[in-house]
Length: 320
Image 1 (tube, rainbow, N blue to C red):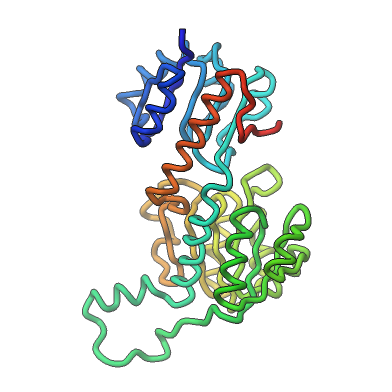
Image 2 (image 1 turned 180 degrees about the vertical axis):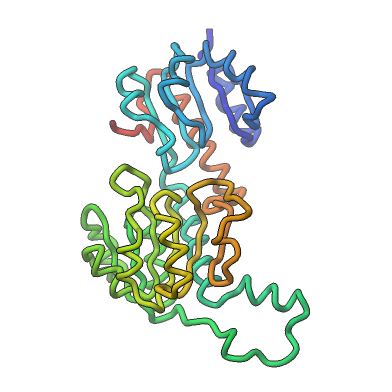
């Protein structure tokens, strides 16, 4: 009998066909009130789970006594209770590296959009408000030759540093759990403390995973250390930032602007104060959202689940 894999997101048919070569596949393109009852029924006999965003906690695992592996189609895995998975001997995987360049492109796009006020200027033109040459009130700020501080110099952080160094002649500071000598050698990046980075950077780009140690790591104190001309970019997870402190810092002029691809609650509530601020660029968590990259992520997750259920070590096994 083939092992059963539940795929709980929409993926390319080629990904499903790859898994179906060795496994039975149950595919839920979305999980909602209509599909959850069927999902829970299938969960009881499932051996593998593949998708993203689903909370893999004790309550869910209690419904899946045969589960052997959980595969995220994302680099992050804060949705997983790793201690609970380890206690049950269940493998967990993610999809790092294949999305590095795409996410870095998005982050640099947000940096440029925020610095040059591109969404705001776009609306000005479309609303028929461009009546004459723009005044200084609508000027942006330069990106080239400025100082970029990257918090979290992993694969994506390094790809951002590459673009900043070679494309924009930026000085690069970084803060990380450990030194990244490759980034230092290739992009002239300088390792420093978090406080030093915050004080010296014109652009602060947060790219850390969400862990107990990084939750709300950027708050009132950290915004207070930044330059008043600083632009804050968050491409990590919403909960790495104290959103109330960010709103206050933007309102009071402690920092100049912010570009955000992530929020504490997603989708963000339409009455959130950040959505009314002209000096904030907001995106709907689209860092890796291109057809090419999402396909690569899904296929890598499929490779992980097939390997795990065939007695092999998945290529992206998360070490507990």
